[in-house]
Image 1 (spheres, rainbow, N blue to C red):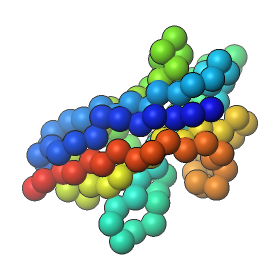
Image 2 (cartoon, helix red, strand yellow):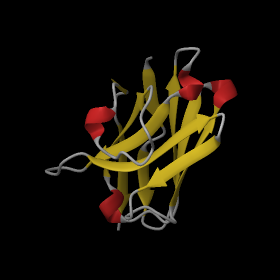
Image 3 (cartoon, helix red, strand yellow):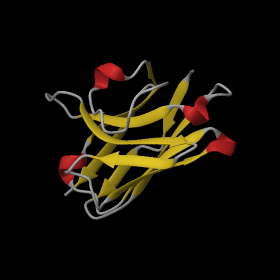
Length: 126
């Protein structure tokens, strides 16, 4: 699986951005896909994850973005999105998408993800 993240940019505080993670691979729709971010001088942190299975759609969010960010996927386009609303300066970071075959969305460790895209920079000005 190869992942390509895009959609980052500069936005004012309170604004919105939508990140996209386009994937190759016919079985991507069954993978758990997550978004992580890394701010300057800080460790990479979990943002959100999504998994689609025969049981339905599962999602999870970090407390810092819950209620502001929404993760979704379009299996026909092999793409996962991260809609980011009410952005704050502290959301400034490089955002990465990642995927794994069998993980649960509740597992927020970056070590369980096997495939990573390149980052896309999100800058929120105050």
